[in-house]
Image (tube, rainbow, N blue to C red; front, side, top):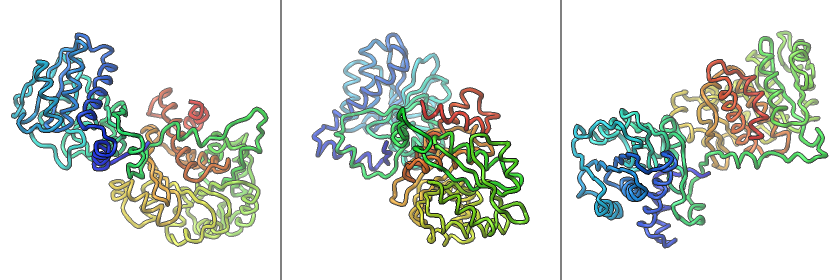
Length: 509
């Protein structure tokens, strides 16, 4: 599902009118009708319900005026507060304001925020103040209106974008409407999926307002939100005569003293996502421990250094394992000892199977990012912000403020698929395609959860899924598994094993 900026949406509206011959007044009518439909769904029935519409002077307010007419026709008690001078309402919004006045819908003009009454005993408030029409700080008069909405404690439906959210970045400069639901038009806006704005959206509905599909397909956007349909397309069918050899063999190179859990979680993540076989290669002195931890995963003791971790003496056996497999997951729990760093730098250029690199695999590359130029196989990297900061030589704060841009730039720079982990995980491909993940929750901020993700992505690679689709599908299902686990046990105390166990259920949802 493509996401667009405010300017891209404005251009789509223009093209719909000029090329698609859809009058702008018809687009507004369709948008307002969509607001009415979502409002009706929230209310159960509009009959006898008290609804307040907070309208601005622009087209967002015009959508609200249209919705008001339909709600009144269905028996609702509707009042409109227009924030600003009605003489400044122009174009299609003016046409619909006058139509609402002809229908004798009460319209109160508010020029002083102090004149906004307390909004209590209201069944629904419709926020039609700003929509995409904001850059920078909210004006004082609108600040008062937004505060009145938020202080009402009444259900709120936002029109297009909750007022106060920057539609392009999700930034909030001052105040923002906290909506229970948002109805957005034609295509979702970027700011609805980016933090902090995403926290204010509530349940999102994307409404068709009549823009021709051929125009929507030419939005110019390279950013998408992952959908369940997209994730499902990446999963292999399971015919009745299927056997384990049909679903790939994943090699996992992970673990060191004190971090066998990371290795086990990664390996089991590969199985839980559907790989037919997983073999975990770990330092040989840890093999007995891992055989106790793991039942379904095969283990292979790899020659180790004197510190019970991978070193140069591990390379030959590790490559022999990889040659027997279809894909590789490398990095979780390897540690950062000097000999392990040497092992990683030595083995990565020799791997000729699709691979996912995580954790200490990335930390080893950070001191010599030229290693990316030596890779011979399709590669996915899965850094958290701190690991990415080390890779590209910047600060975590810089990455968090520009997650989309930096993920895309890193993917192009290194020629790999980048999975930038965190809330609203971003996946970027060297081609410029970028995805935002809508699944996941704060309960997943727990040790080992990222290892499960690495295994899941590796398991999809082993099944023959392309690197980009493996990353997108793996991230989506991993987040969904976390959501399913949270619904059962709550956010606090949710651990990596809970996510692991929920993966098969996430696949079947």
